[in-house]
Image 1 (tube, one colour):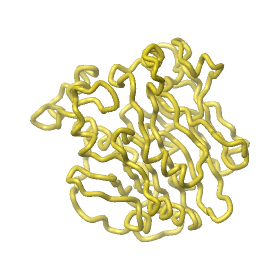
Image 2 (cartoon, helix red, strand yellow):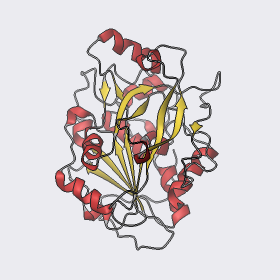
Image 3 (cartoon, one colour):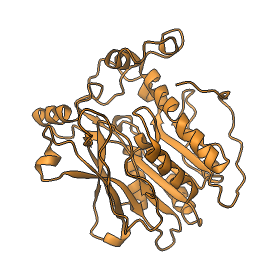
Image 4 (cartoon, one colour):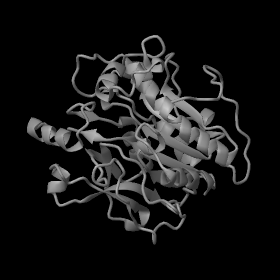
Length: 336
């Protein structure tokens, strides 16, 4: 991925001034970069792939000079950097739509600098995107102070919190079931158990968001392609038109089902479901499901003036492609 703009690094964020209709978007990666990058690569489960493993599986996609050992990190850190690079298109699109750069934060960065969610992030943010890509074994958890800071943030008119807990693969202790899940999604880079999102889970619990991220499900695609079949959308419930002009998101081999854990239907709306690839079995399919919840909205309620949305982080990256429909979704989030 070529970036034609200059890159800055290791500097203090310059606050963005408020402008009516010009949303200020911030991304928060929930991981501890060092803890993820320093995981023992002889461990089979609950870690990211190394860049060497990515190169082997994706060969020859990454066999160019910019991904060589002379130019790019080859361990787990290299794979984490792929996530950063894949966010550039989203940052560019949102910057063009809003006139503001997208601020990107990490819970613990490469230099070991820890940044909890507090006013340093929230003061100049209108839309906060929390990307739950922390492995549960790394013990990231939202503190009471962070939960209260986000709750206070959402009392401001016009705010939006987008939560993106990632997949939860291989929860069962039954190794045969783990093998079935692995065969269903078909990604050799995902281990038989890969559990994400302790930070987002704790934040959702603290805020009363009645959702649990489950499984890693392969979306249905048009035969012979990686183009996903259209979403099943509930336009009647989409009062804010988040999905105006949107028919698909993006192909990703293992997307979470956002299970709703309340019977209070007005509290949370499932706006989009993704049909599942049923060519290979999975416990979720065997339970009678043919679609999984992919995009949810909690309208303002009580003292909460802001919106809460749930959408997987991969919808905002270009590691797995993208098209006009996805770009329209990004623009909708930035301008509504």
